Image 1 (cartoon, rainbow, N blue to C red):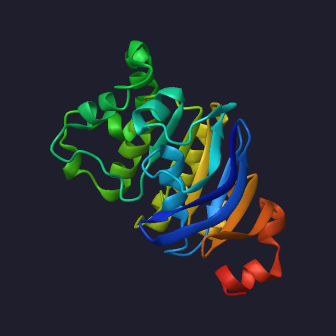
Image 2: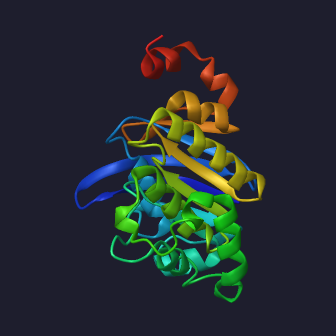
Length: 233
């Protein structure tokens, strides 16, 4: 579904991604792991069209999307739920969700609205509440729900468990599994290594702009080098 080849990108004279190759197949969860500052968000922003790479290509369902605008990429079927949620705090939960269908699937907004309310019943109870008054976990649900309103075939989730309580983290990963079960491929960008590898089929480990490990998630979870670097074992 998504193929990245020889990707290089950065900010002005600062190079961040040093030439990476990556694939995501339809219907799978792929984890992207790494500590802060190694290029995870830069990669997400390249896929979503916010950053134009200096070299390499990104192809989605056989179409080269390198250089397309974010609105065009959303229309093709990629949704990006950024780190920090980025909801509209002064709009209601209802209006935040509806904005997710602005560019894609607008003709099915009622059906998708009902589907999101079923997936996130806590949001259904707060539809007329200002989004900025929600708890952190509820705001994360709203951000994901807004992304799902566009019926994405691939959804990028950037640090969805950041700042959540342990109970809320468990609930969030269960929701991610359900979203995937309904047909969307997921690029799960996380520092929560154990949970991510348990949820994903495959994974990539990014360090200083390069992939240093990749493969089946279960194999990486058992890798002594990864255990020592990220799990302290």
